[in-house]
Amino acid sequence: MAVALEAGRRKRAAVVVLGDIGRSPRMQYHSLSLANQAGMEVDIVANGGSDPHLLLRENPSIHIHEMLTGISKISGALTLLLKAAIQFIILIWYLCFKIPRPDVFIVQNPPSVPTLAAVKLASWLRGAKFIVDWHNFGYTLLGLSHGRSHIIVKIYFWFEKHFGRMADGAFCVTKAMKHELDQKWGINATVLYDQSPEFFHPASLTEKHERMKWKTGTLLYLQVGSMPNRPALVVSSTSWTPDEDFSLLLEAALMYDRRVAATLAEDDSMDEGKLWTDIKNGKQFVYPRLLFIITGKGPDRMKYEEQIKRLKLRRVAFRTMWLASEDYPLLLGSADLGVSLHTSSSGLDLPMKVVDMFGCGLPVCAASFSCIDELVKINNNGLLFSTSSELADELMMLFKGFPEECDDLKSLKVGALNTGSSSKWSTEWERHRLKCMITFDR
Image (cartoon, rainbow, N blue to C red; front, side, top):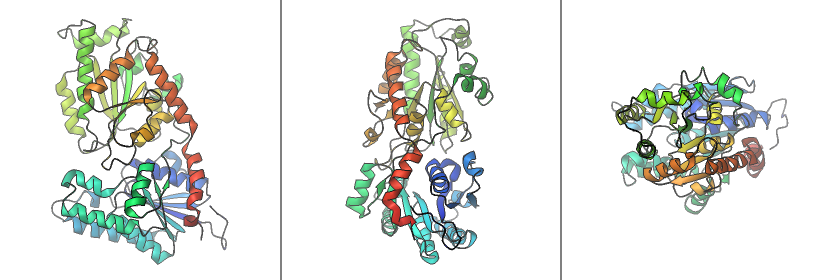
């Protein structure tokens, strides 16, 4: 990608996200690479909400322009058509008038409506290239709530395909998606796998006990984390949406709780506090207590928090929280196992949370779907499950003898470390951007 000065002006890129930029890590990584590796000025046009990573906020070459956020929550009183029209006008205002003229627009898809049309028009008016970064298909997400045969979903599909084909270049996240785009949409996309950046890495003991303590309050794990009979820390990140069935994890946790009780001949009438304080008194367990930390924001969070309270778990504890982007890698680097419930509305995208987990050397139990084997290699860096019972079986197998005599878990951790260290985002981006050179050069 040529980045030489033209008439005294640095090349410029506009990164467009019709959503919360703080919850769009891939577009944040694009922005950092454009600024640091390509030497470009970068304007991010996105909704506000969550803070993006500190590296973006402190980078003098990256300029964040927050659009109005309330419009994305309008429903009921205003029709979807009116909502899309208002969003279109706002996008055009920012892309054509609020930011300096870019050489290239890079837009996240989905959402497709009205983003693709707005960016296409802006690219034409401002003489810039137009690149789509395909994370998934918007019409399949809409189909989760309306059904694939609904007229709104069919219109959305036409819109997404029509304007997606007008792009000058495209990235996508899997080989399966590339094949779909090529064979059925007539779009030649470059596969740019999600990779974790350098700040995702295994946490040192000092980081675990000094930096995480004040972030997560009085979590028992952090009080006894150095003890050989400590509880195991399991992390799952979720958007609390219909494409992630969180009930699978709750059912598996309940099964683990009951199976451990039976194996250890523990009476459920025993005081719950004693079950956990026994750890601090040095009692050893064949199967550890489990502490699940669930991170993320989303519409179904409160519903599942109420379900957790009703389960009356005694050997398993749950904590839900939202972490700043700087603290999330530290949590992953401190954990013992990751769980991914992502199944993909299209069956063609991969969960970025798993990529981040591997970057921290964290093995994963992941929900199985059509292209997950592009990322999770069974008995190498993780395991797959299709039912809550299968997940419970995996928890029992991996944590038997924890933390010292759990050979299966240790083996997967080695595989996860190898996967995470084999390639980082900056390396992948540098290699694959050359395939889209024409989209950056003028």
